[in-house]
Length: 322
Image (cartoon, rainbow, N blue to C red):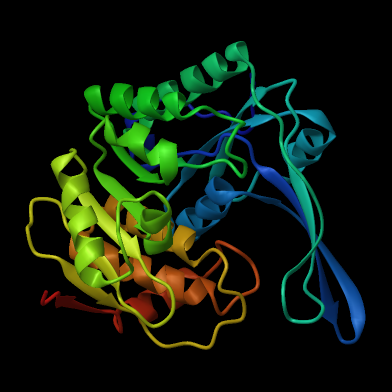
């Protein structure tokens, strides 16, 4: 188990957010710069993108991941960032990768190579690493892998249940079997998209009434604050913990450069704000601002703290009238 930028378990580190990013991906994106090709190589995946946004808001991150194969070797050099402590488990599995072409202004897939599943011993090591860091820092965001089969849903159930039972605040941005699994641990925050609720059969339609019904069901299953992001101009929906009032989250209108990753940034913003001690309503505004800012930038999970704060003032929270 390798540790970059080792840190102790001092109480001073308790404001850090631990992000479970099980198997990051290597991303290669071809852009156009003044008529010439411009190639960008980055670490990617939901948890990695979320770590960028959380750290950009001034909240330190501990990123727990598995790295293996040639792609894992490269990712080991790309992952360390300012205010992100990287904790890794070396594995025989291979991290996934992709090459995307954005020279036309649209994202075109050139090539993609999926990551490979972790074996039992590797899963045990990744669970132990994340549990340990979670117990040290007290707040964990569980994010999903790029591929469905690399990490079993039961690992999410164990992490959610064991961390929550030991006083950790658990947030999750998941869908499908992993969402079902993490709900067994009664997480403090769930963020899910309306498309994912439809795919999972939790909502019958994209109508707000059906989405709210799905949110209430998740509340009955033990979730705390529940946020549902929606596509287009429809407001996101939130059911804050200890409240029966559903809120509409109206985001600032901005012209998108790349809509990918808005939901991940929204989750990261909410978690970062809560970790900073802000009340849930302010956290929802910060999260919405992060999502809105992400779509006007080409880099996923990016945005400046000052811009986020300015945009957050323009986010309106209104009671949903169903």
